[in-house]
Image (cartoon, rainbow, N blue to C red; front, top):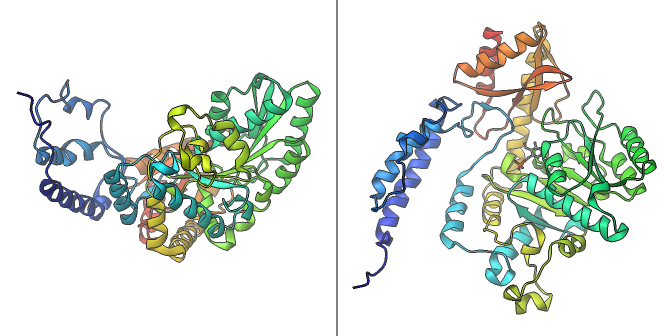
Length: 469
Ligand code: PLP
């Protein structure tokens, strides 16, 4: 006798477990501050608690849920802890989590407009909203020549830009990627180098930076000319508004003019700092953006949209679609052929795509632009406050400007003291921050951006580091 199929969780049980799970998440957020920020797990500790093979028989959901506390939490580093000062923030928020639930519940694939028109049209509209909210060039709207699309990560956006630029350059010059050159600063995020490698570029030049950690545009121009003289083909410049190391800001306008002179593709990586542009006082940092061909920033860093949600914009969608559109018969579709719709499958590497725009839409609606502005300004003012404490204490010195909410400093006693302090503060378990290297010397990055971080948290960090220094 054939069975009736697997014993699915009933609607009634789904409701019961779902409510319990929402309670669990709310409870987690309430108690996360009391947990050691950095996971205190030994390598293999979590895996060793899982059986060697997948379960043959179904397990009750209660026991699955109880393993969240028993097995999962001890292996979690708490990015949502307000004492999070490491890397950059990766904030979650209640409306974002609820939207994720809906997205999973709908379980749709938005690869074509017709595979869920709402997935495409809400994304298009919200991306056009971002153009106005962040004062990006109007040409980047889908109502003009450009457009925006959500990707998993800034690395994906940058990789896509590199592929499109390579495709465009080879169509014009009929040359191989092995002679093509990518330029970016020595402080650029590794995703540019990685993307260039994946896309098959033959050369990457890391251009020097000035004392503000900004790309020296004259050095860029000189490098391009040198490569041209050697018979290579300069193709792509990756500039940053807010580098990962120190939030250095490249001179976008100067770089854009040089890129235009030599007919190069200009991509701007504002993965972290892009969210700050919702506040008009930071927009001078993106002056010249109208010269860019593509741009990326991550709402999943500093806009309360949980990972993954990276915005990618192009000033002209035609080269993007020309490069990425391949139409097998099984994807042919009446709506697509009408030309009246967007099929986002042609805007990035994967075919399938989930309903990411829902969480961005719900976050923007739940907090409003003014709520997000307030959060950004709050973090920037805390960073200014923290920097002022560093400046006033002769045991420390700032090592770079702090245009947003990242403060980089070192101990004046030398590299060993800086490294010892980095480790000592983390060893308390009460905070997590990350060290890095600048100009061959260790430094400490204090990234203030967790949604619940208050002045009291910053003061406690200051007191701890001051006592341990
Ligand atoms: N670009 C910059 C400037 C970054 O700071 C980061 C990550 O911190 C990235 C790119 C990579 O972002 P993602 O993890 O979304 O690929």
